[in-house]
Image (tube, rainbow, N blue to C red; front, side, top):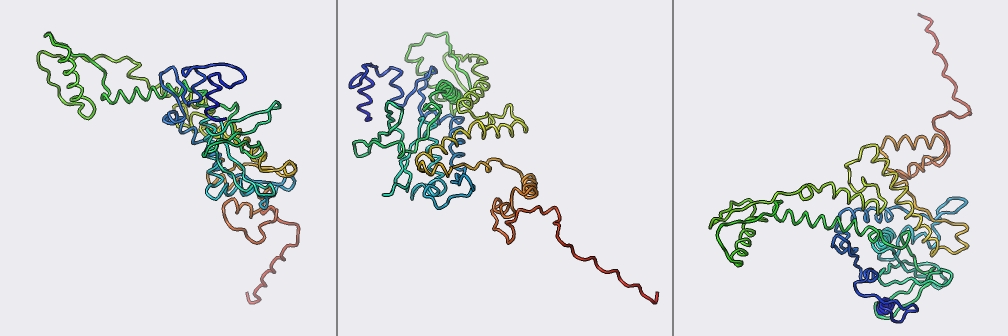
Length: 406
C-alpha cells in the first residue's frame, strides 16, 4: 500500500469503512513515526535511541541474534547438512555484500525499532533459495486474506509496488507486531525529558535560578539587558567569575527542591522500566544498584532463557518457512547454537570437557574442535581415558638376580 493510499484510508477516503482522522489524532502519529508522550517529548525510533538504556537493549538483543551461529541438521543423524542451499544462507553469506550475521542483526534491530524486519528471498529457476535481501520496513505493508494468510506489498524505489507471497519474504516480528518503543513510549519519554532537564541544569553550571532586586526604578529594557548580561557573564564556561552589580542591584538565589537536586533515583527507575519493556534483566543494561556476583550470573542465564530464546525461536521458524520446502522440514531442522553464551572460565570449561569425555558424550577430537584445534589421529573414539581396558597387560619385569659374591 502506497503512502497516498494509506493517507486516503486514514482520512476516510477510498476505504471500505469510512472513518476520518485529523493530523493530531492518535491514530495518525504511527503513520508519521511520532508518538507524543505526556512528558511533552515526541518518541520515535531515532529519538528513543538517544536514551542509552534503549540503545543498549536494542544492541544487546540484535547483536546476540546476529553473533550466534545457526546450523541446518538432519533430524535423525544430527549431522550438519552443508550441501543444502539453505546452509550457506544461515551460516555463511546472505548475499555477496552481506553476511548472515549482519542480516540477522539488522532485521532484529528493525523488529525492535518498528515491530517487523523483512528480507526478500531470491531464488533460481528451480526454486532454490540463492540470496536474502533486506527490505526497508517502511516500504512494506502486510495484507492478509480471509484465512489469515499473509502477503507482502513492497513499494519499489522507482515507483509502483509488487506483491510477494509469505514463502518469499523472511519476516521477523515482535510478539504482537508492535515495537517495544511504542509500548514503552511514556517511560522513554520520561527518560528523554530527564536528560534534557539535566542538560539544562548543567548548562546553567548546576546552579538554580534566582532573581535580581534593586530599590531603584528601572525600565523593562534595562531589566532585560541586565539579566542578559548577567547570564552571558556568569554561566557556562564563564561560571564562577565574580559578579559586580551596580545601582544597588542584589542577587538572591532560589533554593532547590529535592526533586530538582536529587532525581538520580528517578533516572534509575526509568532504566528499570525500559529493561522491563525489552524484557532484559537490569544488570544487562549496567544498572548495578542491586546487582551482586551471584544474581548477576543468574540474570545472565535469564537473559538467554527469557529474552533471547523467543527471538531465536522466531528466527528458526522464519528460516525454515522460507528456506526449506515442506518435504525438507520433515527431515531437516534449523537450530541456533547457544553454547557461546554460556561463558565459563578455563578451569570450569576443562572440568566439563573432561567429564564429557569420561562419560563418552564427546570424543577428544570434538573437544579439540570446540577449542578451535585440529583433530588428532585416533581422537574420534568414544572411550573413557580414565579407566583401563580389559585387554592383555604387559608382563611384569623379571627380578634382578642376586650377586653371588655378596
